[in-house]
Length: 244
Image 1: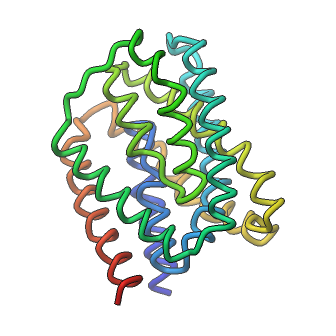
Image 2 (image 1 turned 60 degrees about the vertical axis):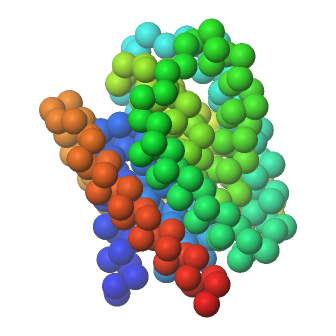
């Protein structure tokens, strides 16, 4: 019962953060599900909620003035990376992947605290979009978390809120689309897990509009600090679980 409550709370927090900023569900929900069950299940369960929530935000912010070539590039390389990462998820030891995820979360927290004002021009972004989002896709496929690279990269570009949400949603949705057939091929995605993903989307569905309302009215800084603290505790729990 407490395990299910923890997952529901994580999906709600992730949904609020995603509604407000365009990203946040996997970085919160995947570690929680992995701590309760295991990482492979966590990554598989989150694919359906990721696809649906990002499709919704793509539609909602479809009029955003984005660079279409840049969006196609990050979608293509992100999807390719997600496919490669899924192969790693199927073949690498679960303990190694779990510790990698904990390390990635810690790196994300440190980067957000130390480098909150990095600036990246569109000209520079286009030069490095391929390797950056290929690696981000690999992380998403392997451990279900690509925010340390993808969100930091797009945040550094200083996009408007609508442009940021549309662009990052294109990236997340493209990865989910490719992850589904690859996961099915390796036996990671089953009908039962897909159904679990649909149920996991329900608290997310409720939280998304609340996050959108919050994002339009207040700064997400305080909320982000709460989330970073929460993630730090989760990373510590994952490390202790695998080491002890």
